[in-house]
Image (cartoon, rainbow, N blue to C red; front, top):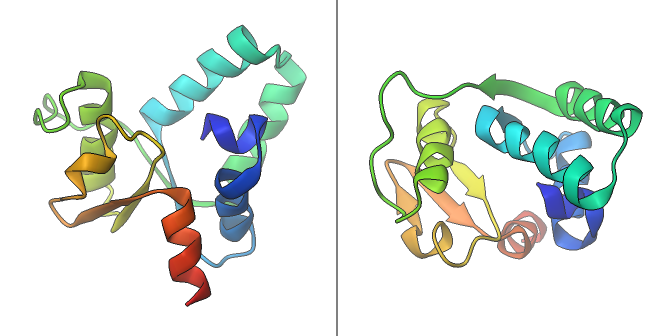
Length: 127
């Protein structure tokens, strides 16, 4: 998600597809927490810019998902990524888009959630 707002490219186009209604964006609480932590700290987003971005995401999303009730199942080798994956499963998402080649993408599929790069999702939307 951070890449979508700092670099554009395929991650940004995935957000555009959600804005156009071509796919349903579910906001996952741990992803939003990371976004609100990293954008100001590493990329100098001010409060107004961050608020505008969060409002946009809220407007184009179809749902939001908080953390699961219990601890996430250890799947990825990274507790933070396990939490993101658990939220995706909890939301009944069918797809998780990620650029995390170290932890999430190698999982490929978990409990009905496929994990794809932004590029792979865009290629599927075009076909």
